[in-house]
Length: 91
Figure 1 (cartoon, rainbow, N blue to C red):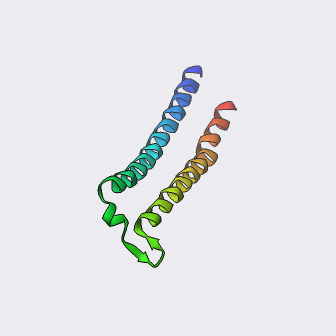
Figure 2 (cartoon, rainbow, N blue to C red):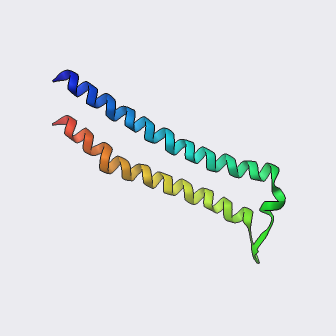
Figure 3 (cartoon, rainbow, N blue to C red):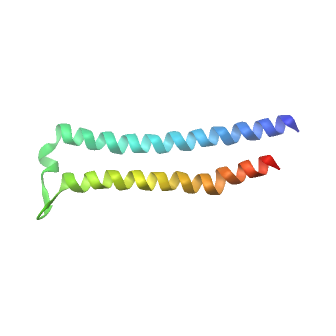
């Protein structure tokens, strides 16, 4: 029984790490992609979409919104799957 518990706990921990790595990688890609655009494609970011709104401002706001969405995804996953699995392991 102990081996099964330890194996399940290890599997839950490994899954949590995979989810965290994927979401962290996504955020790093979005953030550094935006920074690289600032560094190497300033004229692209300076394009006006509508008066008073450039592509750079829009993408900057989308970086922030993306971080909120990725945080929501992690919290939702943790509340529905991770916490449920830990509850089952405690029983």
